[in-house]
Structures are given as C-alpha cells and as structure tokens.
Length: 439
Image 1: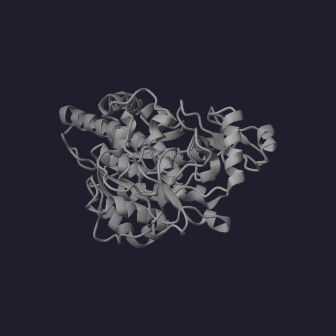
Image 2 (image 1 turned 60 degrees about the horizontal axis):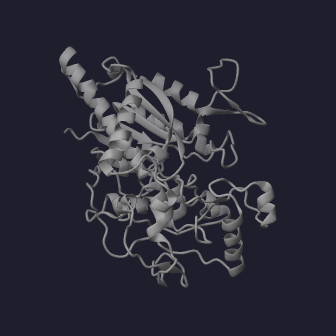
Image 3 (image 1 turned 90 degrees about the horizontal axis):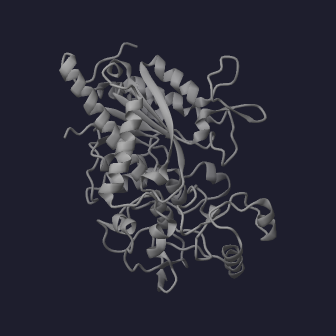
C-alpha cells in the first residue's frame, strides 16, 4: 500500500495528524503557533518511543512552535521544493471567530488565517486538501446578526467558507463540503463539524463522480471503522468514561510537574467496555492528565443537586441556572446513556454524568477519542487575558479534531487518491506524480 504524505497546518496538539497516521498516511511536518500545543505534538509525534510512526520531518524546519506567517516568510522556497512529497494538506484555521459558542467577530484576525492556508496550498500544490472547522464558517457575518447562506448570493454578505472556496478555485482546486457528526465515527461525543475537501483540478478530471465520491468513500470508511474496531453505532459517555470514575477508588497526589501542589488523581483499575479497551491499548503505567478538580464543598453540593434534579444531556436553561446561582452561559450535565455534548475549551462547561465534578483532561481526551498513551503538555488551565493567547491542556483537547473522525477522513482520502491514480494509469498517460499547476 502506498503511503501518501501529508502536512498539518494549525496542527494544535495533533488530533488530525493522529487520525491520518492511524489511517496509514505518512506525516512530514506540522505547523502550530502555540508553544504548549506544539510541546504536546512533539511529545507524541517526534518521540520515537510512542506506538506509532514518527514524522519524516524536513531538516530545514526547526522542530518548534511556528506561526504560519513566519514559515511563509522564512521558508517559502523550501515549501515549493517539497512539491510532489505532500499529497494531502490538512489544516483547520482557528474557529473562535466563526463559532456560535462565542462572540462571532468578523474582523477577528484569526478569521483571516485561511488566507495563509491558501498561500501554503499555492506553494506545495498538494493533490488534495482537507479543512475541518465549525459549522459557523459557512455562515456570513452581518452587523447585528448572522445570515445563513443556503444559496449563493451576489448582492449580500459572503461567508468565510465562500471566500475560501473562491480563493482555492483561483489556485486550481475544486472544493466541496459536508457537515459530519463525530458520534457516528466511534467518537463518544455529539460534535458537528464542517469538513471541506479540495481536489487539484488537473486530477479532478480523473475522479469518477466528482468530489461527491469522497463523501461516498467516507461513509464506507465510517462503517468499516466501526466493524474493524468492534464498536457499536454510537458510544455513550459511560461506555467511554466509567473506568475513570472516582467512586470506590483510592486517590493519590498528582505529581505532574506542570500542576501546582495539593491536587489529587484517581488510581486506575483497568478498562471495562470495548471502547475503553481500544483507548487503553498500547498503554502501560500511570496515565497522563488524570488530575481532579479541587471543588469547594458548596460547589460539589450544588453539582450533586443539579445531577439529581435537572434534565441530563441538554444545556441548562436560563431559569435553571438562576435557580442554582450559576452565571455561566453554557453548562451541560452529561447523560451517561448518550454521547457527550461537544467538548469545548472550557473545563467547567460539562458536568460528569454521575459524580458532582467537572471532567479531567484525560476524560475530555477520551471523549475526543485520544488513546490513553497520548500525553499532554503545558498548563492545565489559564484565565483572564491569557485565555486568548495561551493553549493549555483543556484548550488543546477542546480544539482538536477527534482522531477517529480524522482516521476515517484519512482512509477515504487515501482511497480517493488510489482511484484517481488507477484511472490515470488506465486511461491517461500513467503519470501519478505531482503535476505543476500554472499560477
């Protein structure tokens, strides 16, 4: 089987890279601006002790946190020289400016990073692109509200997705997108995401069925993944997390050097469900990022009342939050019988389904489908003005592409490229290498 090469832009802690690697793709490099997130990435993808292939990192790119602007400024010629080795370019620009979970700000500078993504596309000219983002990327900003663009409009606002498609079309790529629900891919979490796929136009003519073929292959990969991994159609929160519950287990001091003193973590007794066994495979010893929150007694009592008296699996409404004296806008008491709500970057958005506490970083990682051997680096949380500048562990996990969604995407992309090359070899001139695109 040919191992197609990929690079990951806006890589975060590496959820997309992990899924692509599990799908049999070969990682070359990743770009991530935040120092803490890159430390996590390096600990998992550049450490040869991990149970997966490491990246074939180019010698010209220092293994450190980089902003995409800095890479383009210093190494654009090196990127151009890599044409033909990067078959798939992956990358999801930061989504905070698009997300309905926060303030949608049209001139948020993070919203313009997709322009840098397009500039890297032009330099590398990969065969295929994949970009994951929140559904709000397909909704146009307006002055006082948002306008859903179900149809193209020439006289109204355009979404960032429409702008991205237009920019990539100018660089000779056909692009299409689809909303996918991560819970259908073996991820125990209701997480809707926009998946945009681009195919270089000189290859598009060899693709039977157009880009729709990719989404057909994605559905095949989804069904095959559940069969191969021995997973049911959906995975509940308790199926994912019951082995990490604190009740009845001893706690020990958290000795993580990046955690302040006086925190505790629960000891681990072993997996129970098929999903837990899948996540725990390949791991030995003490698990990383198991630190428990230190809730005051009155907070624990309030959480216990919420779990007893409030509807689970849905966000608490305004009246309920006032009843319990909660100022937070988004609080979900989990339902252990259903997939979790979307894991966000804020640790106190979700309450455990049976214990009066918030989730640990490891539990959030489980809900995202990160295996237990995957380690996280940096602070656990941050606050105040630093929240928009730092990427601690909870933020890294909440921002990540679920690895098992990414695994299915990688398998579908690999099969798509195989089909294109087979068609070329039969009906074309047999060339399967990168073709320079006139710009």
